[in-house]
Image 1 (cartoon, rainbow, N blue to C red):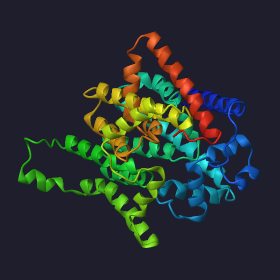
Image 2 (cartoon, rainbow, N blue to C red):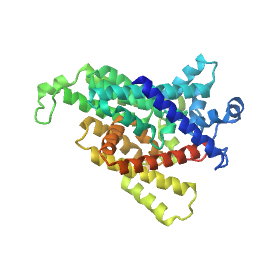
Image 3 (tube, rainbow, N blue to C red):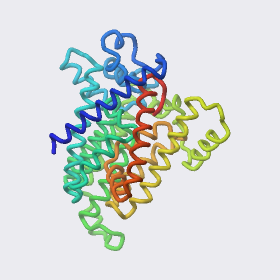
Image 4 (cartoon, helix red, strand yellow):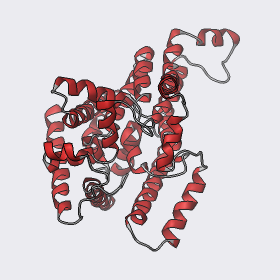
Length: 379
């Protein structure tokens, strides 16, 4: 299994790098969102391009700590980069890439363990194909926290399935210190704990409630407390815990907005704005991903564990409340339940649908790689 998985990963990486090379011939390089001169001088093009956009901030935090408006980038990923860089003579870009690739491989191994547990062992390689051909999968190999969060979130799910609540709480807390939507893992573990201990609305009594408050529940509470701990850290170092949210203003993500309002805003952009610039096409791509996520959420209801489904829904809902779908194409990358449901959905379709799906995925994947590596925002 590991040998064949590595073969899949090498093929995937080769495709991503070929797309990056072809992109050089199509788009001029935009220097605004690419790593600074130091990285460009020290590393070849096919390396430093994976530190674009958010990668710049993660590398900066890993090297020098937080600066103004960087508090939206949660600390665990840059902390791991800093530790890894200390082992390789402080080559921060290389360290970031190593952390992302190792995390991605560990995430895939954890997915395998979960599929065995869920009795879906036979669909592993098809799921792996769906995962690797997902349009934004190139971010798994960038200096982004997606791989690390995917690993931690999937490991937390596995710990919950094994009734290892303390380990699940610790891993979930680390996931929350990696990305805000780690908070959704609290509800996943809580539902798994209630199910494992046969708590239902009709069986609740004073005695059961008393026994509900155990060390296992306190361990699950580590997840929201990790988030509160980060807010306290920002308060103590910056004097204003709200900087975590106000720093999101740069991306227009500092206000809570009803998701249907965001959909309406995107529809107006698509049908009224005829500029056909990169922002216009990115808006279409973002809305397409929202539609696909919605299809999978509706399809998977009662087809996967309810705790999985709740985790997936909340993971999509939390970022959609920020008033924009910016970054939405990447949010599916973090979710084992999403890829499990997608695999179930696609595998039951006819060959024509599968061919069409993977063709569209590869085309979108090329567009994502082209925009990202050439310095144009895509997700």
